[in-house]
Length: 530
Length: 109
Picture 1 (cartoon, one colour):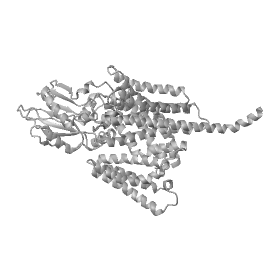
Picture 2 (cartoon, rainbow over the protein chains, first blue to last red; picture 1 turned 60 degrees about the horizontal axis):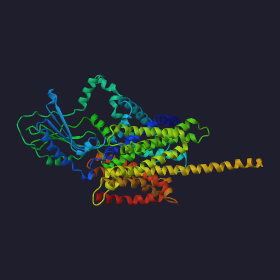
Picture 3 (cartoon, chains in turn cyan, blue; picture 1 turned 180 degrees about the horizontal axis):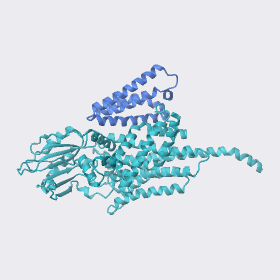
Picture 4 (cartoon, chains in turn orange, purple; picture 1 turned 90 degrees about the vertical axis):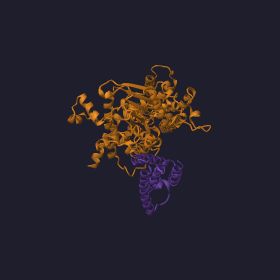
């Protein structure tokens, strides 16, 4: 009975995994890069000032408020938004005059705070790279969400069936036996899957939760109707954008100093994200400090203070349980709460997921390749594996190259950066089709190695944000976000180089073995000829 | 202290791993005693539990620390799995060296 179940789960795992494996690898790898989206953003905008010379968040807020007082003293609302994860436009101020709630068309104003922010080159940056994992770039947003949803659901099925058909999940927990052919690939696949299993299940399930109202619209239909206006009403109820603030009284009152308020808000933890002031200069002024969440829940903390006395005002009650669960799942997926160290853990876990998918795909061909009857189908899958597993990193490296090599004033820069990614990926497909599969598996990692390894060099030749400047030197602290990018590129280049070298040596061995094996067959023939 | 807690995870996992027949043989030749295995297994679970507790209590947000602990578990296990076939002598040494280094690291940071 259990053997029957295991067998059927095994087939489901093998074929279900193969069906969506290539797209899943794309989703996992680009999504993993998303944990460093702001760092990639900064690297792709080398005109921005170095972090070591940048001013503190509190100082930026004060500067922003002074500027707002100059440009819009009579505004209904001021807002200073700092540079943070999820804000790719950089620090800026915005304001609104006229009450939009009364039906009067409010006037909105916007101004960047960092001068260089506007002068930076046009680029999709890390944001575009990370958005690819659910938008699939060229596709319509809705279609992409459905495709990604189908793949995520298949992933969940594949993970669970994989756990069931794994024979010794605990006995083999730490087992990896290198140089044993298909056995090693299976070990690697198991280890990468089992060791990061909590991450894999969490990321897949929460990924589905992201679009749950889209995948399961009939749940909403029970209470709200399916048409668009009712759905908007639902989202208004579920995610109230802002509480009601008191109306302007007309009595003038000076604004409380912002510094002690920011200091008081720091006790709640989480990074400072934005400061908004309602009715500035009025007796009814309210200061709302937004800080990044200090729990895994994705909802940011909104702390309200009286704008004149600076006293904290009671926050509304906690969200209902269902909403908290939803926020926690979304928060876990995005990892916006994570500091640099935790984001490295996320990053490595994501790479383990990509590696699990990659080894699974390779395992499919290795198992069938060793049989005598390995046909063109196995070769085709082998080629597509090389194109996906190595070709996508090549495309991503080309994306970064394009960022440095395309002319800075070229109008469609951002679009063509993305075209370069997919164009060079397409080239790897042509390459893999033209070359023997085994050669492709050596040549593609070699190309990837060169592209990543030379990236810091290209960076040094085209910008002044290279390792000589970004690493700590001459007593300066250095800029680890930028230096980290270059160092990671070097490390990735080394890993691909080692892969190419290893595969070359091993295939050389395999070749000499087959040659020596065929010798005894040759000898008698030579004798006959004599 | 959170860093110390995360580093402890490796030592705990190593203890659990070396309590297993197959991996014990990878690291050490000769027969193994039953008492050693049991004490390795018990101390392994205790270290893991202690590190989770320490991580959650020392961080400003227990939920974030718990997420980090699970991540540390995956990566420590990955390091261990890579060391076992390629550098088996390092496995035990690293498990012994990790706690003092981690403690020093979190005191400095």
